[in-house]
Image 1 (cartoon, rainbow, N blue to C red):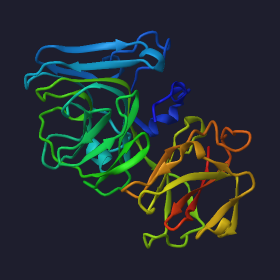
Image 2 (cartoon, one colour; image 1 turned 180 degrees about the vertical axis):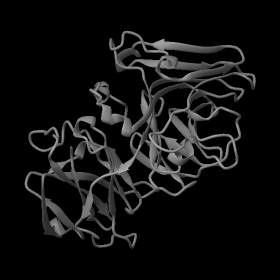
Image 3 (cartoon, rainbow, N blue to C red; image 1 turned 120 degrees about the vertical axis):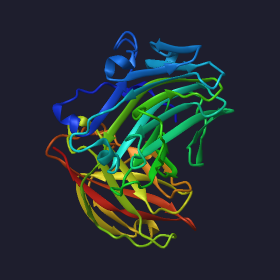
Image 4 (cartoon, rainbow, N blue to C red; image 1 turned 180 degrees about the horizontal axis):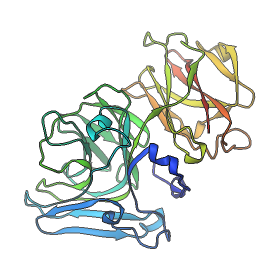
Length: 366
């Protein structure tokens, strides 16, 4: 789905945010600031070469209301490139240690040109064979965008040229050199492996256009790397197995601080290509097989239904959403405050017109 202006309402950041966010480029919205800032003013260094490279503030980008920084490589020789690099300092340990843990690299951008994989986002720890890199390269195919990797994976991002969309690489396992998920507008498309990419000193957080002999152009609204902290306590599990032979599992990542408004829910081990959405309540409960479901509802009281964020499990068998803690969809919508404990659960269709649930997760917000 296209990104709406309201999605990017500016939030007041607290000092605690440093525990979640490692690096950030934010172009802002119409009038705030009046002009999209150069990424070099937000901690990034410009790396460029060749001719016919454009770096342009877009303030705002038409009716979207979003500011953006356009990176344009119109040099069709194999030497033209322009990208930005930040080598962030994790709160503890090295960047390699950070990348070996759990994190998410997210870029909200608008693709405007790129018949081959030229535009890219990347997180890498260094140039030696002990280091590791995760990278997505974007190209346009008709009305769609294709996200591909140097290790041969490719993922279709439908209607990717119709506006601003969010592309993410998310690593949810503490296994060093483990696989990471690829997401498009919050939808898990599949997984990619890490790889060693010996490219001199150009590592850290990178975004822009690399030399590929073709035109590449994108408007970057926001680029962010943040750690993913496991949140909450699981309860009411395991649920009855679904048609995969496994019970569905709910995990929560983000910050326990309500004012940071950072919470991601992921339901995994779902049947492929099935629809589902998430539920929330201030009250736990237990209802066995509601409405003929295979599973059990573990919430009661006023239950919020995230029907505006219905997802499809796709080939990966997973659904993820970003939760707006300022508007939990109960009636009336509720803003989470410090001291509240919220309980979440996923509800999804299974084969043969049945449904099932994930286990529950309880999160105490501070």
